[in-house]
Amino acid sequence: MKRRDFLFSLAAAPAARRRPNIVLILADDLGSADLSCYGSKDLRTPAIDSIAAGGLRFRQAYANAPECSPSRCALLTGRYQQRVGGLECAIGLANVGRYDEAVWLQERGELGLPTTEMTLPKLLKKQGYSTAIFGKWHLGYHDKFGPNGHGFDEFFGILGGAADYFKYTEQDGAMVLRHNAKSVHLSGYLTDLVGENASKWLQKRTKNTPFFLYVPFTAPHNPFQTREDEAKPLAQWNGANRPAILKMIEQMDERIGGILRQIDAMGERENTIVLFMSDNGAPVGGSNAPLRGGKSQVYEGGIRMPLVIRWPGVLAPGSTTDQVTLMMDVTATLAAAAGVTGAKFDGINLLGEWRGERPVRKRTVFWRYKREKNRRKAVRDGDWKLVSNNGKEELFDLRADPEEKEDRIGARPEEAARLRQLLAGWEKATAAPRLREFKG
Image 1 (cartoon, rainbow, N blue to C red):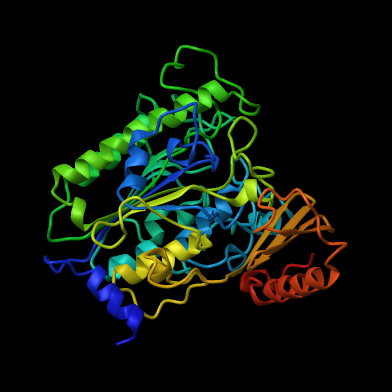
Image 2: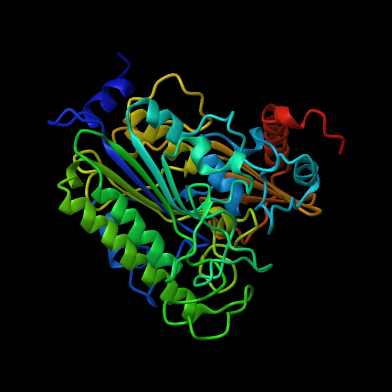
């Protein structure tokens, strides 16, 4: 048995000899500095902080993309979203493709995550897990791309990228709240409905069956509506509204607290991995301080995310790590914890590094974002990072300059050339098979 497999045989088989339950909670557009456990002074997030206090807090965790759909694709598949094709930026309102390849797929009715892709819930079902998603999907509007076709036993939430928190409608008035494939008409604040239904689903679990619960909240994505705003006119869909954003985060934290209490009430705390992260950096109104940039950019502020994991008996309480970790690494690690073998991930198992049993591993990781005519790319190799914004390149030494203030491309042209070559090779290696017929 390989050492890493032995580690997981211990981690995944406590005294009760049961596979660990997994609860994966995702915020939407939450900045890397918008939690009190990450230093925020203008809000309180005691539930999320408790996950960090009971486990591991990451200081160099990255989303796979600076927007919703591509990050969620990478998280569920454990692979670069580029391999799927058409999901390199958020799917637009009412199933609109926002760049050339996505438009081409949309015209063919193929814009979304194909069910031919292997996903984490599919893999976990093969290991005997019950699976559910409560919250935001954003990986395709058509039924054939829905969560139930990707390994989830139950789905409750919205199909697209955002919705009115009380009417569950998109900007065009379309009602997008679903229970499995059926439209549902309810009342209440969307964040509360997501949290309450997730907790109710947990109440039905038995100790004989491990569970995977995925809770992608829509908060604090716009429209900026708090629980108290139902009687007010709909807030602006765009623009900064920091007071509302802070309250939306705190109200999401309350519902996360309810989920954690339900896990405790079930006696499942010691056998449950709980993770919390965001899908990308914050837009204007949120905080990624002191990092440069934000949502839709490949500077650190657009792709760095908060990540905290509680795994009793495996991850030390109150610990931190500087290991560069992407969403797809989280996927690969969770799959291994559940006993999955043979799956092909771009993400890697980093449990040894997270536990401090192995030194921090040097990583070479990539980003590419497409939207309309914008093409933004980045590669990080060790501490060097090359950024390309529509062809304009910058080079940063993240160890000396984590805020990306000093462009070193003039001083280190050979480093930029090396990274440029790595990026070109990665783009070629991750070309999506279903885009072969696309003529750009």
